[in-house]
Amino acid sequence: MGFFLETLIGGLMVGMLYSLVALGFVLIFKASGVFNFAQGAMVLFATMALMVALAWAIERLALSRLVNQEGITLLMATLGIAYFIDGLGQLVFGSAVYQIDIGMPKDPLLILDGVFDGGLLVSQEDLYTALIAAALVASLTLFFQKTGTGRALRAVADDHQAAQSIGISLSRTWIIVWSVAGGVALVTGIIWGSKLGVQFSLSLVALKALPVVILGGLTSVPGAIIGGLIIGVGEKLAEIYIGPFLGDGIEGWFAYVLALGFLLLRPQGLFVDKIIDRV
Image (cartoon, rainbow, N blue to C red; front, side, top):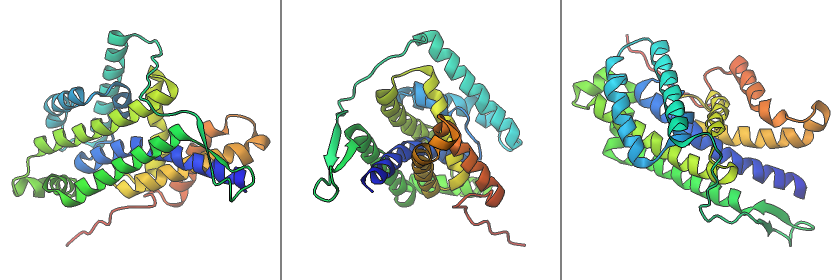
């Protein structure tokens, strides 16, 4: 039982990090209808000042010129942005792996030794990062629900034309949401960089967010959180309990198989916004 709980806790902590990456996708999609394939590069390349400047440049040079275009056009634009950020980063910084230390303890922590024989070993680094992720998620939820800017972002997400008709600026809104997504990418990049080292393969972490948004729904912040936790726990349990029968590496592809199952059974995700059509 103790080993199962250790695996479960480890999966929940990793799942919170997946949720952070997925939140970047959800925030931008909710506000602009754009599925941002550049989020992985943003995780790698983010500083706050840079992301605000990048958000302004993307809105001025790309999004403002692609309003009301087909979704595939916007998707291809974000792919181009991703390759540009990746290439620029390698040109400026090279391709070496950089180690960063943000002061989080890495030694395991023994808990519940009075409840389970031998107690439970929990990674302190994972515990701290999960708490940071949870705090960021709570802050974003309050931002969207309680602030005027957050309500404006939700209005733009619901209907661009209606939002414009009441004086909400699309360009300002998109700059804000890309900046917020950049802030999420900054936190995610620092955390993953501390765990794995800063390297350009770190941008591939964003691929794990794709199953998360498939499970949770592309427009749902709670869905990104729940989806991330499901993927994190599912990977860890599958690696321990199914891996011995199917071989090593199941943790790398299990999330995509799980997402495929959801696409077949519930393609809209666990949490989907209700769409009301008035005729």
